[in-house]
Image 1 (cartoon, helix red, strand yellow):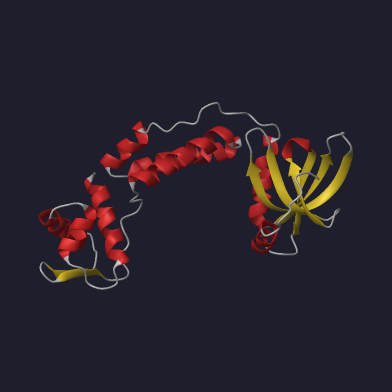
Image 2 (image 1 turned 180 degrees about the horizontal axis):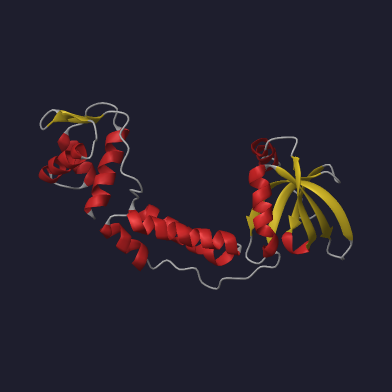
Length: 229
């Protein structure tokens, strides 16, 4: 275990205990020696942690201490790397570039031993698929964030075209298709729209009548969301 990981684990253990906990208990939980524990306690104090107590008495972490920025565990780093690689390969180009920038920024400020984990992790995204309809994703994501209505022309499986005004709630990324979950004014209910069947799209200046958080909560509670429009 790296030293940075050990310090992070110690902080998490201290946070779980509201009362003073003996050094021997902390050392046993972390799988380290008492000598190492005492040294780590002093290191955290030097970084600004308000840890009260002493050897033979016990330790307690006072509220308010935040770890230095971007102190992630090894599992958290692997999750970030894997997720960012998935997005960079399978989302639209704008979001993919953002994912690669995230990894670069994280790597620039991590401790050296953790930075090495980003560069050498064996977690890979294999067989990235290019989905139809990705050109519209950036506009859809912007509409979701801004809580704007979207006017679309939409073709069903038979190619029949309808014009809809929708209130976008969520955007789902499947292997080869992307699907917008939205309230459809034409149908008066929630519907799913495949982006590869959207033949025209315009983000309106008009805001949705209800906040997206409320719409999302309502949509997610539905037991039988129709798979198609």
